[in-house]
Length: 365
Ligand SMILES: [Zn+2]
Image 1 (tube, helix red, strand yellow):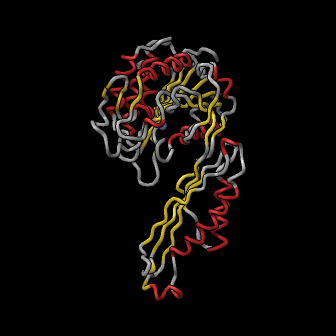
Image 2 (tube, rainbow, N blue to C red):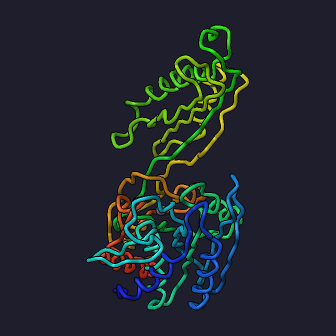
Image 3 (cartoon, protein in one colour):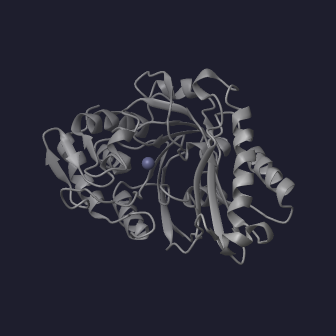
């Protein structure tokens, strides 16, 4: 089935107009509007749920629409990254230049939401569920809430929409990000032998952590060797002749598919404990890797494609962990997203809309 591009674009225009920049935008307002939009397509049940977030962020939300006994879930996140510098137009107003539709979230991933809404205008949904959820870009606190509420029930399959250029993603790495902070009285560097040295403590820990990362470099499948240990950030208020009063260290690892974050988190903590027994690491993010349970079952919906590896993390990992057979499929390319003048091509939208329409119609499964 072909979904007309102008119909997709009219939805996309409205979606881009919502400011859902993670942390500063209003994801609840967008979810409410989506609930009203979905209501028009007569779902058997519709749930709009706001979700509180930690780290001082405003509430986010999700909306779940269900038709019949769902065999498949279509999931799209409604938040975007911050727009950043360098846009040549208003990021919240959709522009059309040649074959490109430009706007914040066009490629990641409001384009997919527009495709699904346009497909609903032409398809009678059968045994399918749609989940529009917030807070994917930073924190991912909404998807676990939807899973914990048991709202997804026993839905066996899911397509998680992310920009895959209409290929079928079935694996990706996880993400473990942690930090630690040390403090001391500071002072003149002539006193450094007898003064607490926050930055030196971090240097010792970072060196041992690097050794830990090195051990994995040759281990794993060829496409997923190592754990990508990254000594990302070390900051202090010291100077070569000033003992710092504080120092903070942030690092990350990306465990491969089949691995998990927990054992690396414990290992990092054990290394730190060996040096400074009382100090506890702060977890910034602990997101497990993803390996689709049975991607071949969803291949027929996803244009008969073979599964591919993805270079980025998705919430498919969380659905998979909850027992759902998930793959990642969506219009646009990751290189077009998270940057000024983000865009998606019309042809990509039409292609993806055809796939979502097939899923909505209950075909194949
Ligand atoms: Zn995304």
